[in-house]
Length: 250
Image (cartoon, rainbow, N blue to C red; front, side, top):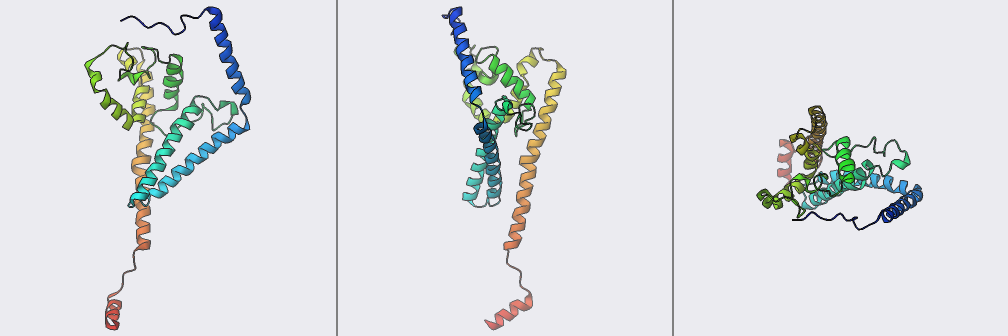
């Protein structure tokens, strides 16, 4: 199989320079258009995310109702998507650094996921966006477990890709956290062990926070709230004398 032709191979040096000037012009145009409208937008999205997350938790207090359970779960799913894709992903990309907001900034932001901000910025901002879709360079190309390019060497293990996709979909944030470790570099001895242990320590801390929050803290809050509401709604027990008196009157 012949190697694919570089997509820019037909362009001359002058054409490439002109293309670069056009890209720079688009960059400058977008940068000049940034302002208060954009500031209001990202702050509004962050506020909306928090409101939806609170609504989801509140609805799940009545999760014995199928309607409340469905609505609460849906709210938390939407909040998670907003947190990861529209807020965390873009803030950590540096998209909002121009505001110089000490909170909404790529150097200070952390998100509700198992990956540390530093590890994700290296694997995504630096590796993925420097070598986008370049085989052997872009680690996000199939996440090192799937064959998505016809020029990738085939192996029978790829027959199970539908299963890999399902597992990655169900445990995506954990898969990304492991992916950020760059297992291939570790196996090849290209990543120093001190860096490996540093990343593992960071992921372990995030994993602990995730597990305590999602599988211990919130279920405990729900249990306590449900118990309190149940006691308030439960009818007051009648004494034996009251029962006998009611029977006599009946």
